[in-house]
Length: 159
Image (cartoon, rainbow, N blue to C red; front, side, top):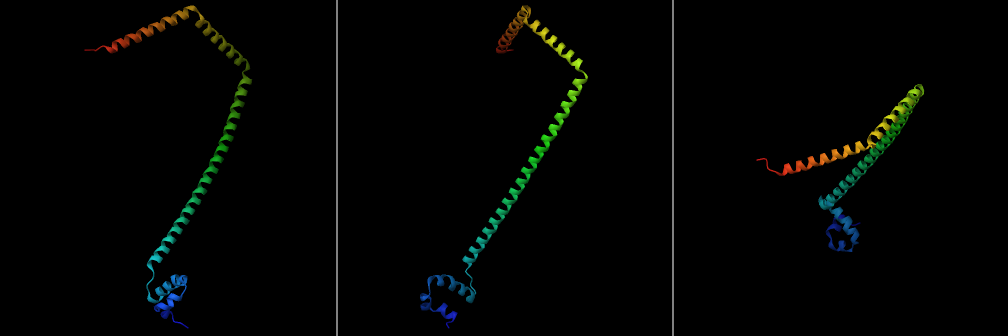
């Protein structure tokens, strides 16, 4: 049986070993025997572990965010449904109260609609007369004259 120390120190023996074996096992054996760990590999392994942990944390936070968002969406849907139900109930109660008031005072509603029609008819008659038209034209002309005077006065100096 060949000693490990002989393998590590004998150059001829190392040249006959397959490169994969030489590249993987011998440095590890040297680190164990001589107490010199390969710091570059350890640091690389450490950075890989940190990356994996970071990726796992990102995945966990993404999953938590997705869960929170889905809960919020569900709560919004429930709130919208309850709002629609409440509004429907409120509308129905308002319509019932209006129907009850109309059924109790049916005669009064007819009188109020007839007075509204009479008032609108009077307004139409008053605005359709020639005197009203001439009065509105005179008022417009007067307003235009006042605007022109203010424009002229604003251009002059006050001193």
